[in-house]
Each structure stands twice: as structure tokens, then as C-alpha cells.
Image 1: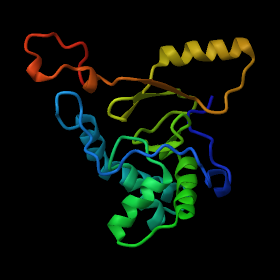
Image 2 (image 1 turned 45 degrees about the vertical axis):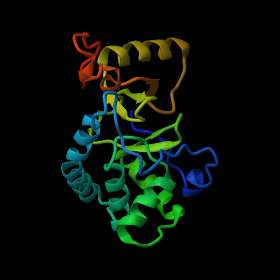
Image 3 (image 1 turned 90 degrees about the horizontal axis):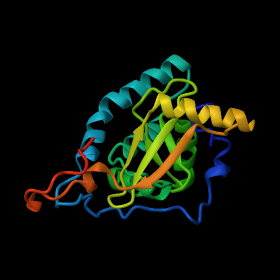
Length: 205
């Protein structure tokens, strides 16, 4: 099972997604209790090291991290929410003060997917940066929060082994080793500080 998404193909594969879910840019990413998003802040803090690692890997692999590819990856690190190509184009347009064609974004996304620097969430038809170096065959579980829109990655060798056993018994060959689970993240589940003596039902990751 290949943990790296195999949604690559040609740029035409990405072009023209009428159902692309687009987060509302400009709205504050706030969790229950009124606080800012701690794990989004953590994701942004990973950006410099992750971008440098991506550039180093490109040199090692003999492929080019062009400015547009770098800028697309950088835009994805501005949030841990999944972004569509048009959202990325808006972010880059604000930074560069010029319009970036969506087809250019799709081509960069194709490259970043092939190199394993980002993931595509099929249920959201959107993309998220991946700062982790996943091992071949490693199952990636995406935890998608329906309240704040954030996405976290989880790795479980036990779950991966159990799922591989189920797939093997069924004779099923998966296209990509990813699982998407929608729900409420620990940050949103945690009660507001104003809740007094209530026990927290979950701790932030």
C-alpha cells in the first residue's frame, strides 16, 4: 500500500472541479472558547523547515522546486485547513499583487503530490501540506474537524496492519493508503475556560 497519494496524472486531471470545497478565506480560524487555533499555529511554525526539506529533496531527486511550486507549497503552510486551487490562487495573488492562473496552480499541485510534499483530501477536493516523511506503505489517517475546518494527520501501525489484513483477505488493491475521518478535533471538543469546573473531554494535540 502506498501512503503517498497517487492523484497525479496530467494537469487536466485537476482542472475543472465544480464541487471544489472552498474555505472562506478572511474568516478567523477560531476554536470553541474564542481562542485562536493552536494546531494551525504549530503547522505554520513547521513551514520553514518543511520548505527547506522539500527543496533539499528536490535537489537530491534531480527535480526542480520552481518559484511557483515553492509559493504554492508555502501558501498551503499558512493554514492547516485544506485549500482548493482557487483559494491558493487568491492567497498568492494577494502576496504577489497579481493574478495567478488556476491551471498554473493545478500543475504545481500535481508536482507536489507526486513528490509527497502535500496530500489531497478526496472528500473535500482540496489539498493540505504534509511536513512528515512517510515511509513506503505507511497508512495516513486524516482527522478532519467539521467545526474549525482543520485537518490533522495520524499514524497507527496497529490500525495500518489491521486494515492491510482486511484488504489482503478481500484481495483488494488500494489506490492510495489514506483514510479520512470527519468529526470534531480535540481543540474544538475542549470546553471553554469559562466552563468552570467541567472536566476536559479531550486534550489538544
